[in-house]
Image (tube, rainbow, N blue to C red):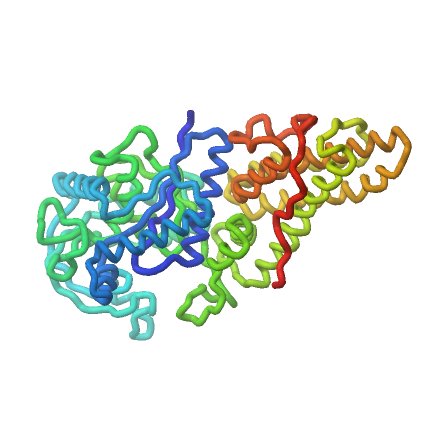
Amino acid sequence: MKKFYITTAIDYANGSPHLGHAYEKVLADVVARFKRLQGLDVWFLTGLDEHGMKVQQSAQKKGIAPQQFVDEIAVEFQDLLKSLNISNDDYIRTTEERHKTVVQNLLQKLFDQGDIYKDHYRGYYSIRAEQFVLEKEMVDGQWPEIYGEVVEITEPNYFFRLGKYQDWLIDHIKTHEGYIYPQFRANQVLEFLKEPINDLCLSRPKERLSWGIPLPFDDDYVTYVWFDAVTNYLSAVAPGTLENETYWPADRHVIGKDILVPPHSVYWPIMLKAAGIKPPGGFLVHGFWTTSGRKMSKSEGETVDPLDLIAEFGPDAFRYYVTREMNVGQDSDFTLEKFMTRYNSDLANDLGNLVSRLLNMTQRYCGGVVPAVQVSEEPEKELWASWDSVHQEIVGLYDGFRLHTALERTFQFVSSVNRYAETRAPWKLAKSDSPEDRQRLETALAAMAESLRLAATVLLPVMPGIGEKIFELLGSPAVSIWKGHLKWGESLQGKTLGKAAILFPKTRK
């Protein structure tokens, strides 16, 4: 069976989860579930980045040990995964021994072959970003806000020969189409690589930072937090070794645009190349959620916590909204008004109404049992044609990460089923004594049931809970692999449908 290994960025254990964390997990989960439905052997990883200066400082402020601090944060992030019905196969924490072992093995290998050397560093260090910064990055004599407090440092440290592999990386990006999605993000990386890159300072002296993984060749230093963090993608599938034949290389790293350059697109592939390990298959880079064009932030006075919507409306409504609203790679504006519009229009009026009317009419006119298709007239032909014209496109859109468009096409089909119901008007046909009208009535209910089955099938990656509930109401188990389940058939004939159900109750908002 073909393998597919997908990861999210591991969350930084310095604060509670927010919308950006939730969206990234949903995005990766949709891709993972889609690949499973295609029949692939999927391994889905997420986790927590637990080392670094900010974690050490936050623990000190609370008067607790760093390990206790990250243990408490880990519970919050793991609870988020459960609340969103995320199907991750593993959860890695960078304080685990399996991770430390691989990080130290990688460091030792690079040191032994001469790609790590010791030298003095003189320059500026951003405490917030936990990275060294260049004076040329100042704007009008001031450091950008993203760097927070910047201090001048002179100290001995260890460096990784990053520049040695710059030409290889440029060639790799140019010769591997789709390596970074969307393409304009790849262009952004190539623009960064136009200038010679400095070697990477990959150590911090313990006298300044004790909360980290010690260098295996010098116990007076700990590992730079980014070198530590990105290695999780390998350590999770290759404990104690540098490569695992089952799942490595990762097929897709799902990350936010803010951590593409340089840690993921430059440091990580070069680290692997230097160690003789295959680079990842590529990156899926998403944008930010904004409000009024600005990145969402509690510090900016946001009054609506989008994560509250999960508890109020359920995980599938939340998953649908963030997947439908954001074009992967672009920023998207979040408002409660937009959420409620999607919820009431797409989910309650279109999908929910289709489920409700099908269950009610089948119970009333056919004893709750799905009849057979009796006729094939123009309304049926149009309905079948609408599915035939769109279902392969939907699969292709999922495959190309155009998830918002895949959902748009799916709900266009759901709307066409509701229009079909209005055209056929089973409630009117039921009043007729004509045998032909009885055939049309039974055909209409059978066609609606089959249409709902097909729509629920392609919604499974985004709305797994609702999808499975619809299959339950249709008297049929949800599919585990799409093969053979995306074409019209008579698979529901004779099935007893469930009682009427309201999947998306309309709200006061």
